Length: 207
Image (cartoon, rainbow, N blue to C red):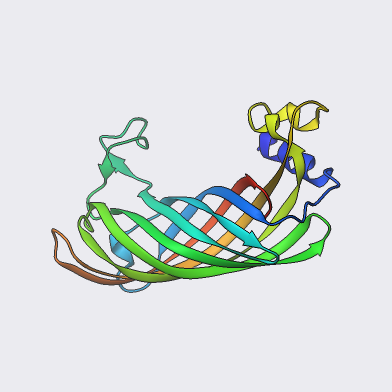
């Protein structure tokens, strides 16, 4: 939490909000849970997401990769690392494409909406081998600015006057994905909305 607060302060004091188009990379971590009649096949999960691509003005487009890893696991280190989902639960991996529109509120602060098609695969547990198409949409708030690249190695260096500058962002994201999954070892056929809340960061030419 302290590290996040320091990073937010670094972005907030970065006066140059950088307007150039170009390549970006983002990653986020959060919590997800399924909804609907078939929610029992995926419980509370750790949500991981990576996005990259290119930005043109207020718009950006690129691939996105995410995973929903069951929170409670059997044979896991500290009941969390490694292992397999507990009985009745599942892991899910997702690939897709996101289009995103960014609207600036004030200098370094913006809001955004994003969405696009998805393809999901069950990798462990009840949904092992099940797959299908889906669609996802999200919205969030981001703070963006020029910071020292070395700060990603050691946080206090965000405030130094040494090293190259990079455009960076810190954001909070809320999204809903919907999947229709079929097949697999259990011959599953499920309609599965998944809701996630995440916090993330990124770096690149702009966001």
